Image 1 (cartoon, rainbow, N blue to C red):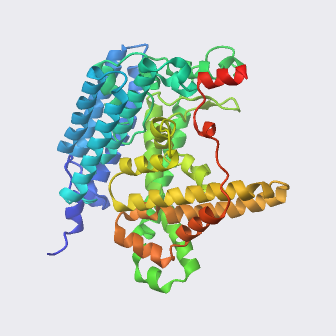
Image 2: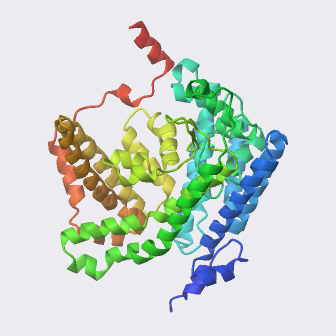
Image 3: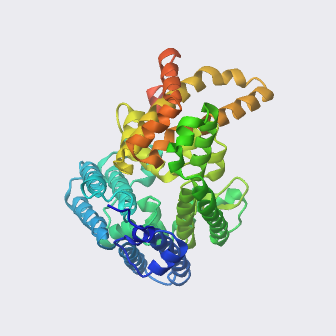
Amino acid sequence: MAAEPRSSLSYRTTGSTCLHPLSELLGIPLDQVNFVACQLFALCAAFWFRLYLSPGKTSPDVRHAFATIFGVYFVIFCFGWYSVHLFVLVLMCYGIMVTASISNIHRYSFFVAMGYLTVCHISRIYIFHYGILTTDFSGPLMIVTQKITTLAFQVHDGLGRRAEDLSSEQHRLAVKAKPSFLEYVSYLLNFMSIIAGPCNNFKDYIAFIEGRHTHMKLLEVNWKEKGFHSLPEPSPTGAVMHKLCMTLVSLLLFLTLTKTFPVTSLVDDWFVHEANFLTRLCYLYVVMQASKPKYYFAWTLADAVNNAAGFGFSGVDKNGNFSWDLLSNLNIWKIETATSFKMYVENWNIQTATWLKRVCYERVPWYPTVLTFILSALWHGVYPGYYFTFLTGILVTLAARTVRKNYRHYFLSSKALKVVYDIVTWAVTQLAVSYTVAPFVMLAVEPTISLYKSVYFYLHIISLLIILFLPIKSQAHNQRQPQTLNSVNKKTMD
């Protein structure tokens, strides 16, 4: 059978086709054009929402309704009938929220949301063979799953657990009353985050809708101590403009660098059979760098949309400047200068890492690192490449932790040694990340095995040798578990 022409592939979508001529003109798949168009429209709507539907001018119900209606429209525009999956999941989980007992509400919500998401992942990729050539509706479904489970756990913390058994963060975020239907659908389907996220906390969202968001954050950081004589009214305009500039740069890099170094080049004959080992490592690093701009673009634009609506204020930084990074999903500078695998992961997809910590890592009684990686893989999807990445990530994380505990203290005795240590660990971290995440963007088994064979599975072998032969200093259990009021009281009594 002849291969389908490029124009046919770019046109294949279940969403709106009104922008097809623009898709053809730019040579970009229609679903990507629809995504960007919705986000740009959401940006304009967000400014209007903040200025003309501000809490002082209208009621919270009107703000909830507007945010929800626009969110539903964007989903239908981008995904067409696929959007039914989101609405079904939201309605099912609201039924759980209303009817389930407080002691089980988090469990039922978690298993239903994750189960439905996994079934959708499997059906889209393997049963209907849609792969990556059609509209990928899983993105919004993944965001909604995060929010459903986040809210369910926070309701359970607020209504089903004693305050002294909660960590300080769990106590702060605990929800003391079940949300109304309008609050629930607004939180899950609002136009600021339905397309590209990020996940956020229910209490923060309700405070934003009701006009308490910025004042609440200023009170948390004690604004008087920051040098303000009266309660300020911070504007997000500067933060939005800065993030839009970052978005533009990311888009330009995507249109140039990503096209020049496609991930498919990692299975070319030149790379696999002709290039030497060091060349393969360097080229792998370059290709993985070239795959980042699309994530930088989507997440930074999503952050700007939320900020434009007045959501995302995090307080005042150490220099006395207003910060709008409550919902930021990445820190590009820290990613590119990371000197440890841990530092890299903590600054990449920040809100998802926070979600994983709050619903899994801090709550499971055993093997928190392994179970968190497994949950992350399941949430991302069922492409085999995801599991290669997360299983490799477990090995690399354990090996990096072991090396750091055994050798880092030797390099802290002088500034020169510390500089050398930082340079070496930066290079090692960047190469390790490139090796680990390559299957994530290659997706399939065959190209992944081809790549790893071409570099002799070097990082797997080194990581295993480190874990097997270097002494592992055990980490105290209470270092992982968040401090509860009980544990604080016990330490005070001791």
